[in-house]
Image (cartoon, rainbow over all chains, first blue to last red; front, top):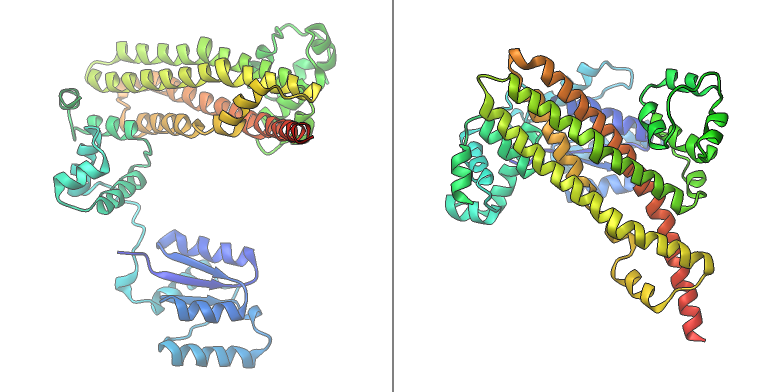
Length: 184
Length: 242
């Protein structure tokens, strides 16, 4: 499942980084950034964002804020919540979570970094020296899916090279040295 | 500043000092006096030391003012240091680890194997630099000093160009990272901890050193040579269009 999209609109790089840093702690989002109102409206129309975070400094006055809020509600039926710059981290995170559909949130559960059964079987094939194309053919899945699995394996294990993955596979009894040698 | 004080400040500089051929036993001599004694260019030495201690310190302009020859001489010394000192040391640690291991010998063998391949790769990388890149770079510098590009060197420039040389650092760095990570996460057995600790420390040391090395290559050598290449090509074109 693709990560939910979030638009962060502010002219301040620091606020933008800050918001992302807070949210990144708990969830995975696909961020879009923007720094003026006109582009923001275009962005809102062009992508299906799960949430839009706008700095009030982007507006000239309160009236403009109200207009924009109306515009969003008409456009997408969205709830509007407000947070202050001085709000603690968890308030910001909770406010956002309450606005989102819980099913959309893919949490970063750092405790669960074990490979799935599928990932293990793909890792096995990688260790045998097969290419993504070959693995796809053998497991009857698309090459694109294999690449996605590979990326997830890389991320979970924090091992980037194929030879590194091979060592991991041997050390964790996913494959034996004999099997690799036989295949070469 | 006294040379001894500099080492007290950061003992990792011992490796750098060694690569300049400077021996310990400085007494009360200053950095400048020691450099004189060992016929080392003081400014170059200082820039390298600063760059080594602080990765954010990057006096591109100053370092680029030094002749390519001295940068290459330094890079060659670091290569030698990797090949003759660091890599064999790490190899030795892995062998000691192997001897001390009872239960998980096959695991150590896998790591040993991985390191062997890594070593071969680093060696091949170094050899390619020494046999192809450095001679080419020196030719470019020589041609640049006369502002004259021979047809032969022009061909070489067209085929190689410095930017094409430096694209495979990443893989060497990633492999080293993976090796460290695997050892830290998956390998330790209680009875081997002492050896593992030493090995991991050596790998971190190598990583720091390699990063520093490729920083000098990527940020100093490559841009400097790229500028010379461009200027030579411009001269070549204006001469041939006349």
